[in-house]
Amino acid sequence: MTATRFPAILTSPIAQEVLQGLCSIPKRLPPKLFYDAEGSRLFDQITETEEYYPTRTERGIFESFVGEMAEQAGNNLTLVELGAGSARKTRLVIEAVLRRQLRLDFYPVDVSPAALREAVASLNGDFSNLHVSPITADYGHHLPQLKELPGRKLALFLGSTIGNFEPEQAVEFLIRVRQSLAPGDGILIGFDMRKDETTLHAAYNDRQGVTEAFNKNVLARINRELGGEFDLGSFAHVAFWNGRRSRIEMHLESRIEQRVWIQDLRRAFYFSRGERIHTENSYKFTPESIASLLCRSGLRVEKTWMDAKGWFSEVLARV
Ligand code: AVJ
Image 1 (cartoon, rainbow, N blue to C red):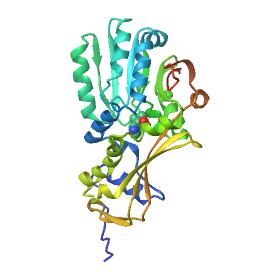
Image 2: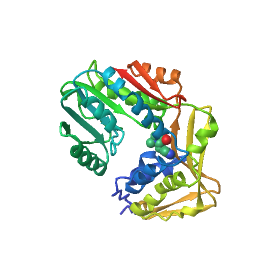
Image 3: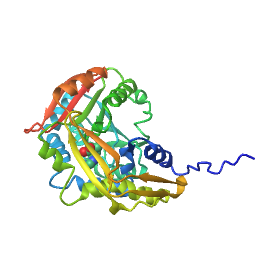
Image 4: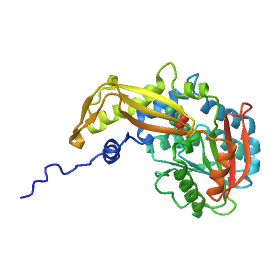
């Protein structure tokens, strides 16, 4: 009898992704693995650090221009948000749209049912003329048919989440969004802009160590969900600006030579001293790189709003 001793029993939904990532050269883990309940909490904490400017800068743009944005987007809108999470910034958009129309349908799309429940509960309590229909889906894999929804859609993709995609993937993603919308629909995308290296570096190396904890949470999560034996202290948080590729890179670097066992994968992974796991890219944009990305995706840039420092952009593109 042939002994298949290790039929990979990949029970947890993250097992296959962890296996693939840790078998890759160089090792990597996809950034979406950051966002379990603990990781989402840590990300919220990052947005409150002094150094992490993107969230408050984007919020400032909405506070100044959301009325203009809603007007530019058009009349009788239906709102869709990709990767809505708890939909906190969306509140400003909803208020602005509801100043221009009597009622509003809102379709938040997210992988996390917990985040969606929170969004629905808090929004429904606050707006009587808002109808929220959550869609649980991984917008990175498949997009629900948004074409079927009534009226003119405005799709929101906020927070520079688009910066986590490789440029090629970002184009593919936007093409799929465009194809799931109808001609005349709009998409509002948040882009974090290139800026001085000191500011960028600090934003991913906050002094309280929240970003470090967020990065290491992916190892803690593997320990929790897959019976991993990562010693968090033997990995260092490494985040730096790669100017040639216009991105912040985050890695976890093994401080020592070691083997780490992951029970559910039935195997150990070898790390040489100084070996890294690449956990995230966060691309930073220029007006030219945004124009090129949207052009390649078959979208027309209609209007751009920025903060006074030019640190963050909100771009309304048209299908
Ligand atoms: C949520 C993807 C926009 O890239 O700045 C924050 C995630 N990573 N600190 C970003 C993140 C490290 C964030 N995005």
